[in-house]
Every structure is written in structure tokens, then in C-alpha cells.
Amino acid sequence: MNPQTTPDRCRLVLIVMPGTDAGHLAAALEGGDVASVLLPQGETDEATFQRSAEKLAPLAQAAGAAAIIAGDSRVAGRVKADGVHIEAKRQELADTIERMRERMMVGAGGVKTRDDALGLGEEGPDYMFFGRFGYDTDPKPHPRNLTLGSWWAEMVEIPCIVMGGSDIASVVDVAATGAEFVALSAAIFADGIDPREAVARANELLDGHAPRFRD
Image (cartoon, rainbow, N blue to C red; front, side, top):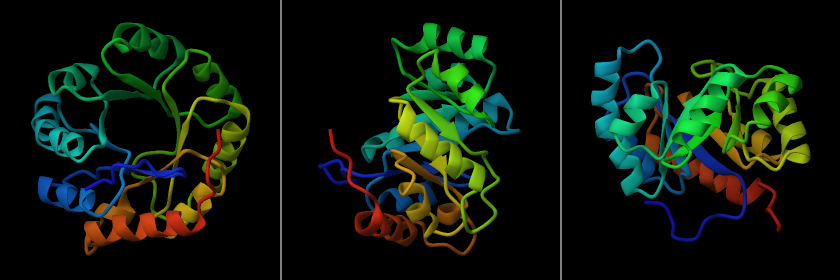
């Protein structure tokens, strides 16, 4: 269960891997502070994805974490998610923000360059995500994501999420960029990992090493 006091440092975002069941997510959420849970649709058809989201989104919300749907915004509305994640061109992001903002947060991702990030940022998303779902196969975060996250955190007020690696210790590298959030997926949900212990360890590392934010 998440603590009542929000940590004044980089926080966790969990990206659910394909096939992750409710039991594994529930265990992860028992491990400590989690800011949000991101549910990617991937290649799953809409009906199957919605059934999964109907089980997982309420678990996140009950634990005090925001449930964010990456994929079909209609599914996000049907499951009463807290947000929708968009990886699209600027106009589609703008249209989604205009349509959804009164009901839920809208985050942006899928960028590879500073120019792309700034263009999307001008539309006013609630956060910018640096990374790619399913590509956290190396222990350390991708250097490009760290570079973009560090630049963004220094230059832009919109919060950013930076994808970590497959090793829990990668949260330290992400936190050092000044990013508000570090996303973990394989480090929490891969086979053979205890998700509760993994989240607890990630928070322990962030408590010990992440810079503190100041107003």
C-alpha cells in the first residue's frame, strides 16, 4: 500500500507487461510507493485489452496510484482510468487533449529527439515519457532516454517519466537526471521476480539516492 505522504523525490511508474495478472500487480502495489500504473494495449485486440484493464485499473486506483491506459482512449473512458497515454503526431495529441482533458490526464510519448519533444510539449500534455514499451531489456536505461530526460527536467516544467532498465538499480541512474518519475516494467514483472520485493527495493534505492525536489 502506498504511503499517505508523497515522497519528495523521483517516484515509480509501473508499466505492466503483457500477460501480467491481477495477483502480480496487487503484489507489486503492496511493495511501497507507486505513483501510477501504465497499461499498454500493445497488439492486444480492444475487447481483450478492455477486460484486462477492467481488472487491473481498479487495483491501481485502490492502492492510490493513477491508472493510465496506453492505447485506445475509449477503453480509458470505459474503465474509468485516470489518464490516457498517447504516442502519436502533434495534431492527434492536441485533439486528444482537447477531447479528454476535462475527464482525465493525457500524457505523451514516442519521441526520439528534442525537437519532437518540444513540439508535443507545446500542446500541454500532463507528462512526457522518454522510452519505449518492451525495450527495457538491458540492465541500465538507454543512454538516449537519460539524456533526453535530463535535458527536459532542466528546461521544461512539464513532468517527465524516464524508462529504467531491467535491473532495479537503474532507478538511481534515472533519478540522477532530475526526472520526476522512473518507469519500470521487466524489473518488476519479468518471470522469476517477486514484484512486492522489487518495488520495495526500488523505493529503498530512491529513498537513499534520489535528489530531493524543492519548490
